[in-house]
Image 1: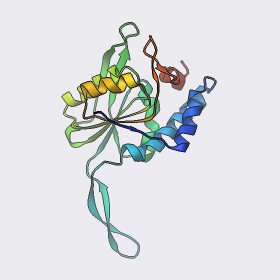
Image 2 (image 1 turned 90 degrees about the horizontal axis):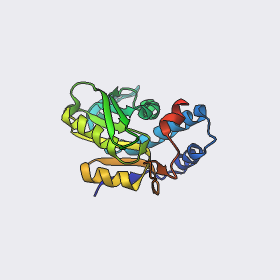
Image 3 (image 1 turned 90 degrees about the vertical axis):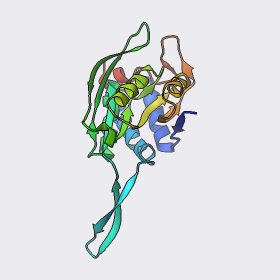
Image 4 (image 1 turned 180 degrees about the horizontal axis):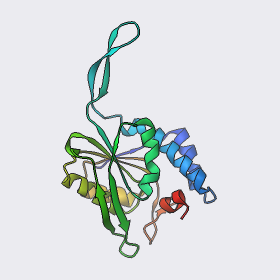
Amino acid sequence: MVMLEVIDHPVIQTELSGLRDRDCPSREFRARVRRVASLMVPAVTAGLETRPIACETPLEVTSGVELARPVVLAPILRAGIGFLDGFLDLLPDASIAHIGLARNEETLQPEPYYFKTPPDLGDAEVIVLDPMLATGGSVSEAIRQLRDSGATRLRFACLVAAPEGVKAIESEHPDLPIFTAALDRCLNAKGYILPGLGDAGDRIFGT
């Protein structure tokens, strides 16, 4: 079974309701996406390994922890860029990969056009970011490219997921943890999530 976690938090769900509103302007949409992303970070990163360190307080030396591995945030262009800042708010030392995938509106298949990552992905915790998990094609292709480049510790975070997309990831990458703020009903004939929130990229960037 795919490792799916729906982050059911009252503040996240309140923000998500605002995002679903068709009259939410781009400025407000961007701000809400950023807030939801920040609120999701604790759940998305809860399983990351830590290592002990010595921590000198103003009064004495005590024990503390730090993340055992560097974090790489990997937004899928272009909508993933709008989902990135909220994660950076809480993970400011993370490196950033860029994965360019355009969806062919006729075949609904992803078409790669850009891929750039930090070195040594095998030593990092990689968090793939995309607001929408619809057909699952883009996410599956992104995971494939990252694994081909050496990534072994991967997880995926999105705002809204469709059951069809979850099933596709289960088939292609059954060991990939998926974190989402909502699991919606289904896809329509054009591959859009219902009830969804429209085209996240268009709404983030006002296009």
